Length: 137
Length: 318
Image (cartoon, rainbow over all chains, first blue to last red; front, side, top):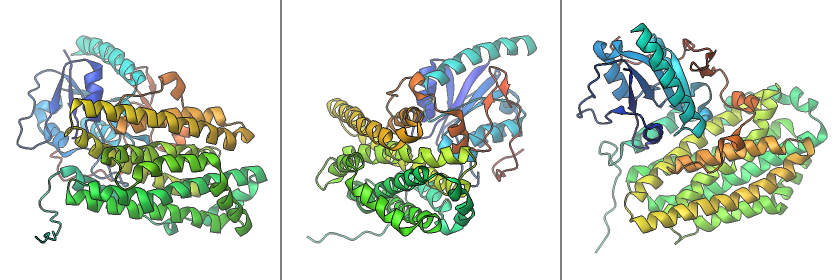
């Protein structure tokens, strides 16, 4: 069964989104010293964006470290991006960067801690997406 | 006893966010001279007189808020800073607000007649709604007022009050008008997003240090200040936009941004999704070149591969 993995910085927007989703999810730690979550099944990644005006540094370093492991990367099925439209072209850019690097789809994007609509869309979408996964994996 | 003067050491951080935000703000630094505003002269001439007057008034209102934030808001939060690095970030925020206020004058000197601009500055001083919102915010910035309430006021100014104004250049841009001016406004919007995020983050850190009763008091304060400001914003919006029939469209944008301002403080949304359905053309003007992704319902370009952006990062191993 595909699970959820997410990263959230100290400001906690993505963590609040995940809490409202109400689905089991593993958190990638902020501090390098803390252990990475153990994943042994396909998962969807939820990732915020920290790009500068040119798009540099969009993907948080701990997420890069997490994905650098080929075994974990092989289980990634899709990415959901968080961000803020006020950052213009770099809105939720980290999801696009990860999608490109890992050859998986961007499933959804939301701003800050997400809206009710985002929560409903993602809940329903993940349910359906997991169904597809069961047929293909 | 003498107090010890302390030098700031950026190699000893109490809060990593301070350096993260400092880096973001300094990398994003810009000046209005960077934007070729004069390319909008022809487009400006195509606006009707009432549309020009509206645009000048909107920008004058934004100038007023930037001035408040530059001279009063950001400096008033410096004595409340918990870390020395937070003070340094606030000094950057204060300066960028001065750059924002200055940029509107660059737009004016490029596009408008002195007489029109002088008239708008008089209008700003006399407009009861604009003055009322500035007064409400300034009240919280006063010396001796509550440091956490000051942060709430600052986030509402940066993440909510600007948007009745920002709507208009996004609207013009969606109709291929004043597109260079819109580019400049997007730079301001980007900065304000970082400011609102950072001050909201510091507010949440502050909440962790106080008890449950105080947290409840601050939440009540935040929501009632939002209600008061929203009331004023409704009137301000109607006065400005009724003439071109856009009031309802602007209001959806206000609701959407009010919710985002509350999220910056760590609070839940106030306005329901149905009240926040922002005109898609305005959303597209806010984040151009950022395609729509809706893999779940099979629309949008999903397996998309990001455009060539500077995303190379030495930390990737693959």
